[in-house]
Image 1 (cartoon, one colour):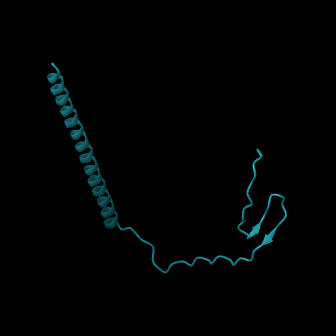
Image 2: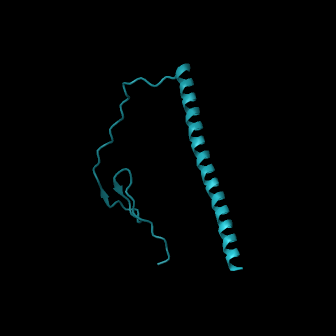
Image 3: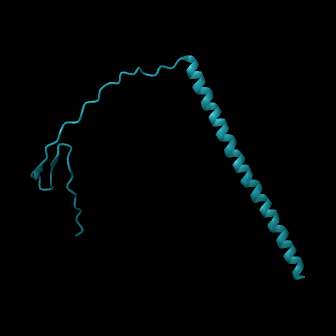
Length: 98
């Protein structure tokens, strides 16, 4: 009950090898197709296209950073205003008790 049991795994050859070491079954498999090289040329970066990629990446980082900072600022302003409202409400409630 407390001894680990290793599951029987299918091997890449298609043979199932149990724990005892005897081969239980043999499955006929077809060989995988050999990948053929594409006829398309590889992408070559010219200095102009490299500058365009760097500029585009920089612009994307700046835009995303601006959006994230503005969202953080909005959350901070909201939290501050809620804290002020809570203080005012508490002050008003304390004045009514007296």
